[in-house]
Image (tube, rainbow, N blue to C red; front, side, top):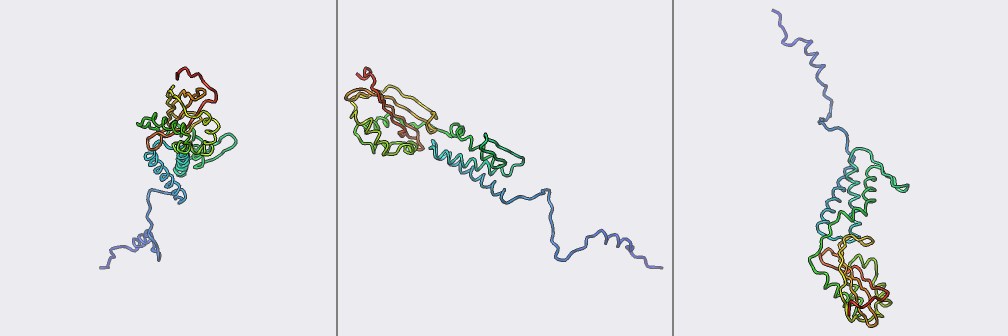
Length: 252
């Protein structure tokens, strides 16, 4: 009886053709459902964008009533954060501002945030009102002016005010306008005004006290502005005195 092979030769041929031929030094490859590649520069842009956003959120909690310089730094960080996150978003973006600025992609997002700085700085930051009574601070400031102690009076100014007016300028204005009136005889409160983000001033919460002050020769209107600072107290933001005399009937 002839011997019959368990597997015919044609089957071995078929299996051999179907099986891949092993190559020397070959490496295994794993395939997944994800395709494409990720640029390391785009990844770093996204990471830094999220990092800037996290830092900005932390500072917004730790520093209420930010100064004008801090707000500018935060908006720059926000613009960089938007550009970093926008670097990984699909789609095309083109920004045109008049005939000056033209940007696309992540740079376009940076331009959008940066150009909206005035709207952001007046609507986004929180400006809580201190529980401290600002009236004694205004009175102490005026007392220092009555004594001619301009250095101590200037030390009570808010950081934003000190960036606008130097000590030398403040002392020069005092000598030319306030000093000739000498010390006040009487000072009567004429009104108190609350302001939030007033036009022409750094963003913030303000309290303005107006007085009718009787000096040796005549009466003038004095206005002392105070601004809520980061320690949730009040500091001096402005001082004005009218150049023309006013009736003293309310002080008599």
